[in-house]
Amino acid sequence: MEIIFLGTGTSQGVPMIAHDPGDACDLTDRRNWRTRSSAHILMGKTAVQVDAAPEFRLQCLWNDVRRVDHFILTHGHADHIMGMDDLRRFIDLRDGEALPVYGTEEGLERVRAIYPYAIRTRPEFKGYPAFVPEVMPSALAVDGGRIRSTLLPHGRIEVLGLVFEENGSGRRLAYYTDCRELTEEAYRLADGADLLVLDALRPHPHPTHMTVDEAVATAKKVGARRTFFTHMTFMVDHERANRALPEGMAFAYDGLRVRL
Image (tube, rainbow, N blue to C red):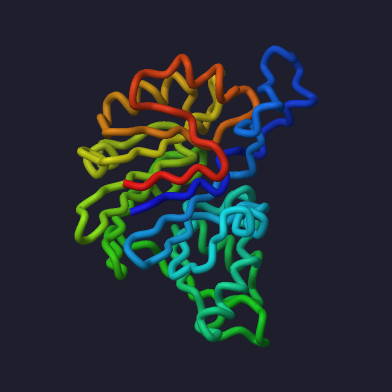
């Protein structure tokens, strides 16, 4: 199993116009140049795309993403959904077969509202997108493994937390972005994971996301072999913040590839 961190940032704030320059990350470090969060997971020969940031097309070009077999939308916020139109190229590569799009009821409602022209079993014209929306089940069997899901609190809505289990290797990856905390079920599903990916927005409190300290405490409780934090604002400087983390934990960055 492999995860490619296509984007590890958020829409909240721009470092060049930070209120306090001491809060801003060092832009001479390319790891601090973050596009918005999305991830590409390979389970055997199966490619699962999680979210499509507004920069999704560029993320695919930069990371040589050539195939998408399944798409999972964690929730319908703009920084996770606005790149979905660019899935059209992958539908061309499927000979026009619509792409299954899994999500919550909230997320799928947003997909239908933003992309009504794409809700069909085949594209209206060659080169157009086509999505078949389906509510994400608690366990989704795909070629290469199984994906378990759970709901996580994120302000007024709930988002999908995902645990990928690869056939053959038995490797397990828990992907929990955009959440205020983990539920008991989320802890249970992630127990014994080889890799945990967790929301860590910024040092200061936020009503719908974990702070860095809260994310570290949560990661310790999960006890995965390795943890990478994602969905950071400009207030998290990669080099400086990494030095303060416990062993086995690190901040992800755009283009990072981790093989389990």
